[in-house]
Image (cartoon, rainbow over all chains, first blue to last red; front, side, top):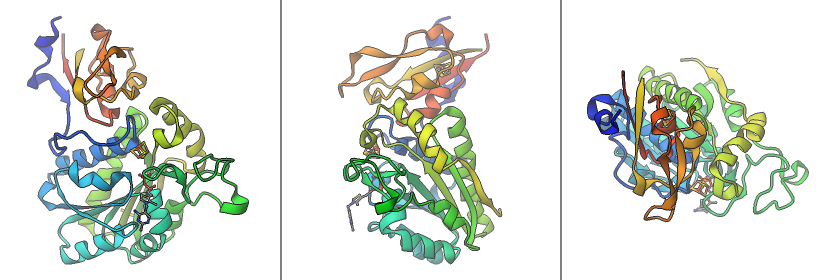
Amino acid sequence: MDLSAINNETNKVYGKSKLLFDKVMHFCPGCSHGTIHKLIAETVEELGIQEHTIGVSPVGCAVLAYDYIDIDWQEAAHGRAPALATATKRLLPDKYVFTYQGDGDLASIGTGEIIHACNRGENITVIFVNNAIYGMTGGQMAPTTLDGMKTSTTPAGRSHITSGFPMKIADMLALLPGVAYVTRQSVDTPAAVRKAKKAMIKAFKSQELKRGTSFIEFVATCPSGWKMTPVEANRWMRENMFQTFPPGDIKDLI
Amino acid sequence: MRGSIDVSIDLCKGCAVCIAACPTGVIALSSAVNGKGYNYAAAVNPDKCTGCTNCAIVCPDAVITVYRTKV
Ligand SMILES: Cc1ncc(C[n+]2csc(CCOP(=O)(O)OP(=O)(O)O)c2C)c(N)n1
Ligand code: SF4
Ligand code: SF4
């Protein structure tokens, strides 16, 4: 069959979201950040809330999120996205407000911020991208780095004796009564991406119900920082990260 | 079902996650490079495509469009 006969708008079953600008994202090849950006764009497009969504981008590799997804954005100081989102949501309670934060941003310099925002039960969505290191600055150890994992600041592997254990921030936040929904997802396979999309839609919609904070952790890859090909990184993530950070719902009060 | 993919060659970074996601071995990296210097994703076995969308769903850069029709 002639392919040009198939490739037309009527037969189109998947294409780039209209909410993604025609710009090449600066992320390294195969980086989970790109797929997660795509999921946000698709979620906002499907819910028809483009004019009512405000994102808060972090310091870290995702700092330029506002250049890629066509919604309103603010850019927070390192780790301070939950504070900006708190103010935004309180002033504009009918908007859908979310933060997008890496594990260095959320679980290191911003640990206090996220714990208190969740403890206040702020009616926001938090998208937490856990790639187990500081990607942007050269792959240093993060609080989420696995025990024994080699990073640029732990060349012999992280030791819990000197550096503590990988911090399970999603499990910790689930203990807080203000938190309505905590789920851990990934974007390494088609099935995982489809599941993650459902979780993201649920998290955004929970803001309509005013149930409290909705929190999605993405167990993610940083192929450059991990010094692996993207396909190897996805495999390594499944074999190693999933033991400490298993995917699935942790709390669901929605 | 008959499917077909369209890759935006200039935007592809050659990460190859689509190749791992395709159940029927449609895609391989080209030996040629694009303007960015990447070996890009190419449908080397286009007749095997069912239009399942797996490749496009995992693409971090949204460079794959999928079409499907009944034959
Ligand atoms: C106040 C402050 N301290 C430190 C930095 C340096 N810095 C920039 S990004 C970053 C870590 C980012 O890591 P993560 O949040 O895991 O995001 P990733 O890049 O891995 O997506 C650090 C420490 C900074 N920009 N501002
Ligand atoms: S350094 Fe890591 S987290 Fe940052 S864009 Fe590259 S692969 Fe992604
Ligand atoms: S649509 Fe499915 S069958 Fe076709 S190339 Fe993509 S993954 Fe392979």
